Length: 330
Image (cartoon, rainbow, N blue to C red):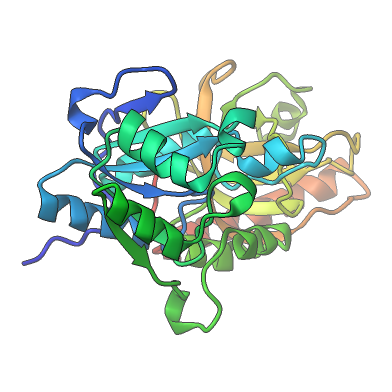
C-alpha cells in the first residue's frame, strides 16, 4: 500500500540549518519546499507531501526552507501580527510531518534586497546546495517580490534544479483556497472548528507557565497560566488538551481573556487540567484548542462564576470525547 505522505509521523530530532552554518550531511542535496509556512495548514501540507515525493524520486533528503522573522514583521516592525505558529511550533509540526530537516533563513535587509536570480543561483544552489524546490502557485520571492512561480521555474532550469509548482488547495471541496489569513480570521471569531479544519489538525500554542494571583485555587479550579504574544484569539472558554514538559497529555478547559469578573487585566491563557495536581511553574506546556464553549463574561459573584465553570468543564469533557481532529501534540 502506498505511504500516505500527509500522515503525521512520530516526532524525532529534526536537523535545522541556519545562516552561516555548514549544511549537515543529512541535508546535502536536499529538495526543499519554500515558504513562510505560518500554521502549516492543509495547503502547506500539500507542498510537504510533494517535496517528500520528489525527494524520494530523486533519492535526496526532503526539507523545508522557511524564514524568520516572518517577512511581514521585517517590513512592518511596528504592526502587530497574529502568528499561527511561532518558530518552535512550526518546527514541531514539521517533525511530525516527516521531513528530513529544515533550513531557517534570517529575513533581514540583505535577504530582502537579494534579486530573484541571485536568490536561486547564490542561495538555493550555491549556499544550500539544493537539488530541487517545491513552491505553491502564489509564491513570490526576491527583491520587491519580483520573482514569480514561472520565473522560479525558468531560473531553476538554468541552474540545474528540479522544480515543481503545487496548485491551490481547497479544504473539504470548498471553492476558496486554504490560507493562513482565513485561519486567523476564524480564530479571531472563536471558530476553532473551522480553523482546525483548514489546518488539518488542532491549533496549538506553547509557552512557559507563570505565577498568577492564585485565585483559581480558591475557586477550586487551579490553572496553568501562559501569556501569549500578539495573540488575537477570541476571548472565551475553550475545550483543550495540554502536553506537559514530561510529555504527558492532559484534557482540560481553558479561558483566554481579561478576567472581567475580577481584574479585567492583560489577556492570559488560563488552563485547568482535569484530574491533575502538580507544580508546572517555570515549565513549558503546549495547549491545543479542541472546541469553543462560550464567550468571556462578567459574573455578579464568584459563586455564579464557579457554577458556570462546572458547566464549562462538563461541556469541555463532552467536546473532547467526541472530537476526532488530528493532534500534533501526541
